[in-house]
Length: 255
Image 1 (cartoon, rainbow, N blue to C red):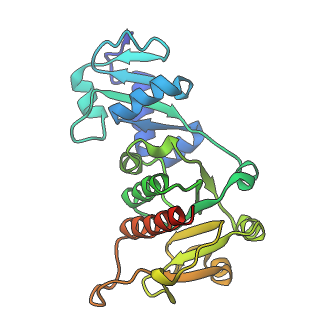
Image 2: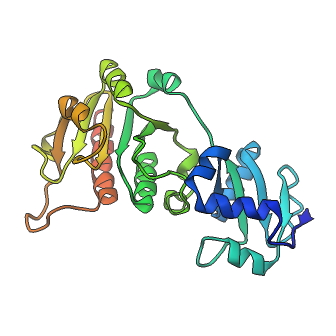
């Protein structure tokens, strides 16, 4: 393992840039992973995705990835975590085309204008937990690879593909026989009255100004989660967990 001592090292500068800039993450096709368990899973199962690994200790067993040792003091200033876990990895983004995904997809979520990275990551974690095939997102949605979003995913970014969506692709999905369910605080149909189809898209986000608003209004069933009338709405990540778990249990009953 090589040792990096200087904060002026180009590799250290790249990591700082990737932590701060969505533009840089998009340009380089890379993102930062700081969860030690998730990093070790990638090293074991998909080492080709690791562009670079930094560690505060010499880990000679990780000979199958480009690894560098850095001082503890450097890791403290470099990490975005309050308490670092001794590792930072630069990971290559995975990609899958919409055309390749559509024929094999059965259930998915669509994030339209979600702006909070913690909510975004939590919804993706829920999507994996409850059997979704993909996560679609609009251009207004926060970067899935924002450090806070990555932390909220808890290592689940490798379990499900992320695909950008457009109104044209919405139309293609609709033509393929999918039903859209748009969760809203004052939706027209209670969740308990919903009859799911065999192909479903669950939409979460900013219905007021999302770019898909008009398209979705034409094709989606508006639904709401029944709850105490004194509460106006729930956090979108919490709502996604309730809806997707409800769907998951209903689908198991139908098996």
